[in-house]
Length: 282
Image 1 (cartoon, rainbow, N blue to C red):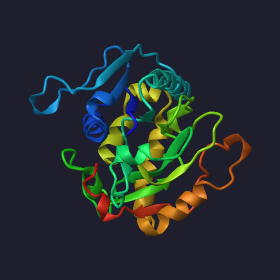
Image 2: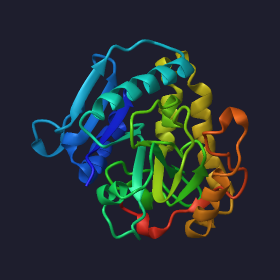
Image 3: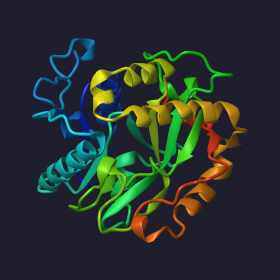
Image 4: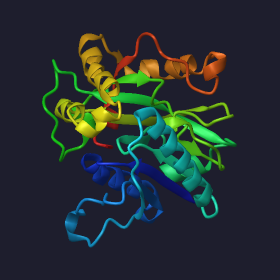
């Protein structure tokens, strides 16, 4: 069994951080989780159940008010440096944003750690990205105290979230863990990366009104998040199991020279109904 660390970089992420710790802690052990805060004043929220702390490793870095693109590049470079240090102890490092959750298909009998330990990949591994959002015609407001999957039953298959988030050796991540510089990518047939940045319409509204994010140039990004719910609501959803394999094949087809190591964008049949076996996992 390989030693696996999980890393995230976060600023003002209290809405997701407890769920992130619980999810990855259950898979790999909280002692193997590393939370890199962008800001010396950033701290973990109060832990649940009366425990003195969350039991994870916390790193704080000085916050610099970069533009969105420059900030993304800086955080990716820093995450790559941290991962390089972690490889002195670990065999594998997973990097995700705070609202992203790596999930192994429940049809696979192995646990996540055992499954990843068996993958014959040299540098990096990607999971199929699913951008989860509210179907406003069929689903109500989100209960943040309950699992997301089940409350939200639809998602958009996304090249943006089919990320090279799993490193098997030191490498340089591109912005947002979207790619590994100088390397190709492999999409695993049984791994999914569920993105929940659009899971709650009120959360999107709050982020769109955040003055710090507006000043840094995040407005267009937040508008794209809002459009996910609109597309999910208006589209005719395919059953996920009928689309997953063909989506992986489409994402892996020839890309342009300037994006050869990133998945090919999906242009149609993107909205799927998430199979019920995933309900309650996150």
